[in-house]
Length: 260
Image (cartoon, helix red, strand yellow):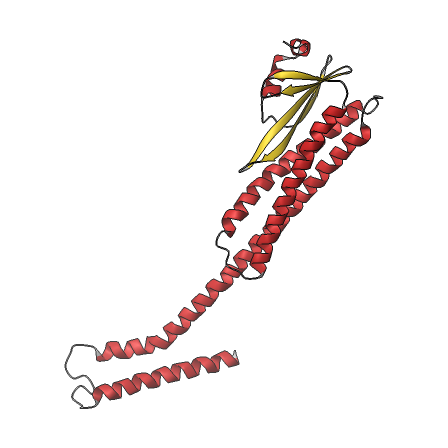
């Protein structure tokens, strides 16, 4: 067992072992504990936390896979780990932006996009998680900097750079969320316009064929004494009446369309 493990509060040790524990900075009398949770992208977005314990001038990294503590001689290794994971986070957000730009271009070019809702929901879910994750991560790094900024061996510029990257990436996530909202508004507007055109066409067709259906229904009544029923050219006259009604309806529609 590592010497630092004997001094740890058992609840803090459980926090260290939690692979998805949220970002937190804890100050104790004998040690400080830093946990930074950042995303990783495999098939889907996952959260992984990186845990450190600082005891005086000794810096420990907790290996969650083996549940062991690794002693670092300087803060450079702490910085290297957090910097690498922060850069991966920035790449993840950049890839989301590229995907949103592709969705935007496809929609604005009126190209078929049957998977829009699926992609939109996927990005929306990832961005919501990233927003909370990065906001808390930036606050945690800021608290860590304030605690150690007066130490001579503290890498102020290095950790401030990580803090700035997390804040900038957080703003980028917010921007991506706004772009997604705008895309959804455009998508629904375009679909509503298509639906209105379909309803408009169906209304026109209904208006054209309604008089014809009335005439056909009337002359199709199976009763005696119908007009033209005994006339040799009765069917032709009825057809001419129907054609006349059709032409009148189309003419009236075109007239009203130009006027209104």
